[in-house]
Image (tube, rainbow, N blue to C red; front, side):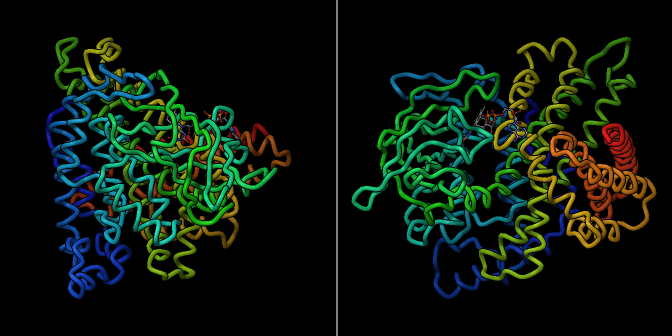
Length: 566
Ligand SMILES: Cc1cc2nc3c(=O)[nH]c(=O)nc-3n(C[C@H](O)[C@H](O)[C@H](O)COP(=O)(O)OP(=O)(O)OC[C@H]3O[C@@H](n4cnc5c(N)ncnc54)[C@H](O)[C@@H]3O)c2cc1C
């Protein structure tokens, strides 16, 4: 893998950090009038020591975090990623053994203080907005997915920060951070993956304490790291004879109280432990209120989780693109670098514009999630924050679906640029190709993301609907753009055609075309929005135009498919 600082070597990321991202807006949403800095002055609470007192302070702090993450990711972790993948995992006597090089890589991130990236300062976290988290995730995923998943699993406890009692938060979050816990998200079971409302694991209460029995499948790092601590946040059914989503509650179960009965042999993520977990009358601590586990807490957590995979998609795609670009400049065929052969150049330029679009969508999604979540955290829910919550519920499944599907396409193209060498294990493309394949499956498949987005797109395109208002505001901001105006017309036709379907199966079957069209339009708008603040907007013009032409072709094609189905 390329050896460099993955924050500073990435021109598009740098341009976003240094100019396109509107930090004044983002910091004002996140910092709540710099309340933490004021509180630190008063109380001297050491957890608030790094709280910024101005936008400039905040940006400097974010820069330092990203520089440090980029340095470790690019100069160390990426250099051992192939060895980590090759060595893989061992399962012995109910314990999982991770490669030593992976443990060393995680230790480097720990020494730099990076794991508590997901939490607010009050509980010992780094206290950074969603956009900065997304940038950090992107560059760590570029280096290695298995390592980043293991290190970042702690962030799943964000659900506690949002929904647990203050007592449980103070008990658990600082401990997870200081003792380097792994956290597993205990949703899937052997018979239920997408169909979470049907989960069967049971929780019963005796003498005021809860005990869980059942089997959880596909539990990422539920084993902990080579003897290190772990908890599983397990969804389980409470109440005699309860059925459906409302009977499900969340519990914290400690590693010592469940057994790992096996790990999956997988296509990729060779060093990420995917565990089968047996709960046998295992003690559990209820999180929040009984019955709210799926309907409130998982649903509330999904927007953040979706943005995590959106960042994973950007990271893996960037790794593949950067490696392919380097290879294409060096590989000579027919007397010239293959980068100069038009068919190869076209693949590379599509990768460049698609990654720019994925990054724009990631930034937009993350900042929209912050707009309503910060309002909730700060007790300042308004009509405006409720509007952003609605938009988040549509844009985050779009981001997860788009960035993961596109990641698969781009890694496939990058492997193609390597020719036969890409298919061997001599280069990193084979690993990236295998690791990319899971992104559109876990944390909700693409089909489930489409189901999550379709309502927000269709209802939102009503005459005064929220998605329409959002698109109109973006369109007004970027000004006249003929290509985008044409895409918008075609998109309106797609929505109208879908509305005319009567049969539920036809609607469900054709939802992808509508959501894909929505994604292409919003991405075209976001690329133009980025150009407005870019140092050199002219340089983005050609790339953006090419993206719009792709969008127009896709949305037009979707319109033809929908009309044919009528
Ligand atoms: C490496 C790995 C790590 C994982 N980590 C975790 C973890 O840490 N915690 C956890 O709880 N789970 C985890 N999972 C599980 C993962 O989230 C599920 O595999 C995923 O949600 C899909 O569920 P399933 O495999 O049961 O597929 P199914 O639900 O059986 O789906 C099969 C197919 O049917 C489609 N489908 C199903 N229902 C619908 C519908 N209503 N509409 C349209 N299409 C539908 C799906 O899109 C898919 O194409 C992990 C899985 C893997 C492979």
